[in-house]
Image (cartoon, rainbow, N blue to C red; front, side, top):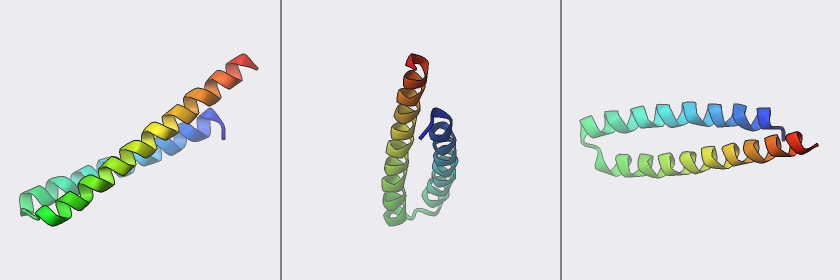
Length: 67
């Protein structure tokens, strides 16, 4: 996977992260604690995926620079 592909994937994940954060705000207003906890777990997983994609992009960029 190229650095550009990883960055595109990270951007997609960030958009999902933002949408999920919005859902969490709505749940907080609705006092839906059970679902809010589920969404917090989803946010955590999405954040990990973003971090992984950014790391892949960094490694790919370094490999391209060294080639």
